[in-house]
Image (cartoon, rainbow, N blue to C red; front, side, top):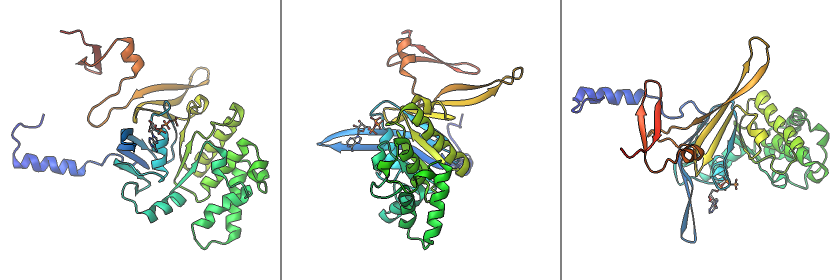
Length: 317
Ligand SMILES: Nc1ncnc2c1ncn2[C@@H]1O[C@H](COP(=O)(O)OP(=O)(O)OP(=O)(O)O)[C@@H](O)[C@H]1O
């Protein structure tokens, strides 16, 4: 407990300790700190993000899940540099998304982030071939790189994502899965630090969705790209190491998966564990199914035990 009447020396020591404490998310590639986005339409306010905290580290491949209207697309649009938050902090690869100028924002969208959307038609220009779609973002950055270098990179990406045979085809001559894999190549063209994907397998059958997800995994493992995928697809959410759930505009729970090898049989199993997020003010969102199961409302009883905190229904005493 800090002293009730601190001396000047106490205050100086406390200030020095605060100065040396690393800031929230200092080592993360993506930091969202108490992010708020309010939309106002016809005088009505919708709080799409209500103080959302999220950290994503470099090299991660993670999924965001949540019910319809929970704020996933709003968050993705902000991270993509297409929308601006109302308040809070959002930083991606050293860029502050609240204070960026319009010019910085354009460069950010072209070089720092790549995105893949659900609608295959939104990802590719219909009158260009796969190779032309992939070289276009490279040409738009305005660097004086030779055209042959662009074509070489496009070929490398298509080979990596197993769509080299689509090189000279236009989108309507490709399957939905091929279109999405070419879209991933387009998003990776300028070697972005972060790849964002909003329901990229939403329009595909499960087999094709698996191939598209494999392409994301390849990009993550072979190119080291940090990837955030919004998905309703349980198969996708179940295959990444970390799945973060968004509820009512805030991150609520997180599932971490790790492989365990049985020492006796050598058999590998994936163990998943669910965590709740504790924010810096100590607030914790309890899953509705837990509170409803015990009829918890308004007030609960807390008890500090040596190694855990017990949360019990209010017994009125
Ligand atoms: N441009 C907008 N103007 C007004 N309200 C908006 C706007 N965009 C989103 N909203 C509202 O913000 C909330 C969050 O929407 P958002 O699209 O981010 O949710 P979501 O989790 O992506 O949903 P879905 O899974 O259905 O795509 C919703 O209540 C939505 O109606």
